[in-house]
Length: 301
Image (cartoon, rainbow, N blue to C red; front, side, top):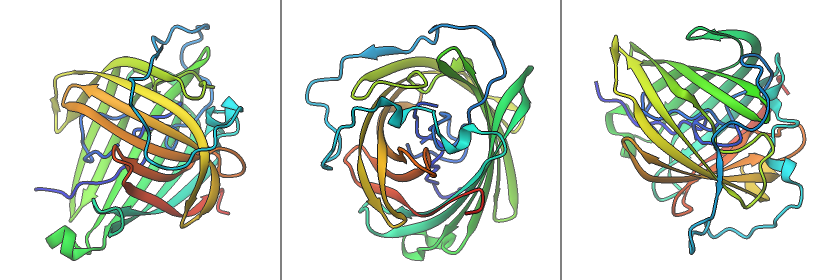
């Protein structure tokens, strides 16, 4: 069965989630990012910077979307400190519009509910931090979505990670997808583990590179591992969306390798306050809006 493509806002790489970028539900790349993965300890107890992430020199002429920026001197705006989903027991909700390639036509609406907890296990690792996400997507535009117009897709995703030294190790995720009465499941894991491209408190305007392999199991079949590299760069600015105006951490990620070629995307996450870390806007490589938040909730409020 063919399924409509989803804008999975959890899969956009950040200082620890992302996956962020546009992917299919069972896409071969799955990056745990700011909007989806929580904090907390557990897992390995090593210290120091042994993550393999490497600051790189930005490519000349490589610019962000044409949005006025106001650089911040506070690098922690893009760090984990104060992030909503770094505390076990916290819940959050992001309601959003997803847009067509013109950046204005709404093709679906999403409601994403998050719940965090400690003590999870994944592929033999224990004591991990778990972020559970239930994403309900309603395909609202029949002119664009065709026969899928009015259909609802429910995706449940579990992301597993832990903090080691000054980096976050992301071990993998599981996905269960319900669409038009059919349920599919998949599991992706990273070798040796996926970093989202930066330390816990990344420097602004600095490009970080990280390499890893992704293996996906679906329907009893293990797909070949895909070697990939992500380059992540952080900056700060104010962003206005339907949910309001927020100080934002702007994350640029470029993923290459495997089935992905020069896949560039941008994500804006709330940089401070009650909603810190929640995704409020995404855009493609050309700066065209692909989604924006219409409502944010933390612990039901």
